[in-house]
Length: 397
Image 1 (tube, rainbow, N blue to C red):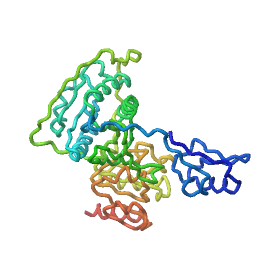
Image 2: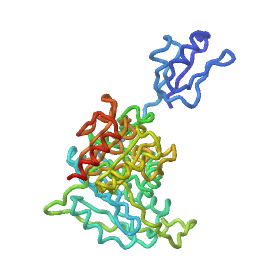
Image 3: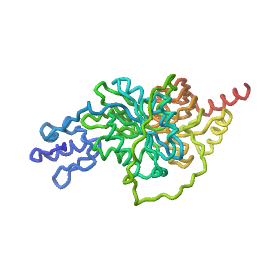
Image 4: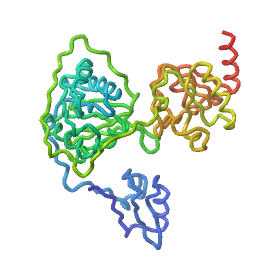
């Protein structure tokens, strides 16, 4: 493993204090005459580059990682989430993206279904341009259990050897993907907001990092397969192909895959809750709102245009709205046809959850607000005046 090495013989109290100030993560401390590095270190090497020369040293791996034979791993695979007796729509969105990525390398698109009695649903995947659907259909997969599903998934990876695997960031996907990735000692990037493919089959996995302050481009160069999870509504579902030519392959089931330690006997479906991810029109409000009582005005406007009310994280933390209304990295990802944002500055964390909307109308008093960089229509003004004006115009119309 690479490490940072401190040459203590060169450390003076003045140098130590300088290094402590340089570290952006507070990982360096100087106590009792000794400079130490804590687990907060992110190996950014800022102390090496900006600190006094020769005091901090970055020591790389003594033995370079053994490169994988990338020619043995081909194609882009999509995990078809078949929970609750149907294919989750995030699967269709991932197939569209998989086709784009596979086109770069001229390779095929696969889908893997782990289900009980849903083999007929595979036709929906073939219609979207999947080349091969691998089906693991057995009663042991009626209910999701981590180990049982992971055993089947690992069997698919070993036999098909896809270069990249896309998994929806659903409850099932978030639990399953890291377990399978761990079995193959490979990387997994969670909640990607963009994906790109290099001609050498390296998948560029893009996601916000360090609290959303930067967009990190993560590449798994030395291992295969490459795993990435993507939230629902980040990508668009593709149009069906005119003449599907794909095939379905039923895979052999090993009874030993079933985890006998856990037995699910039944499940209860929670009452349906309206999800802002499915809304075609959204009215979102942020810190610009002065008080909780003013939500009534915003809600009235939303009702007038048939929209769902949403918000940013600070309003949830203040207790003004519950978490089901939150848009952003720690909330929901939405892709409505129309979204109004009132009093929202447009931090990366929020923008990542709604920037793919068809039409964004932003209202903010600050003309330099980042939200205006992604909005299609920008209104510099007081949100209360704008809401009142829009309400009046709509009622007159």
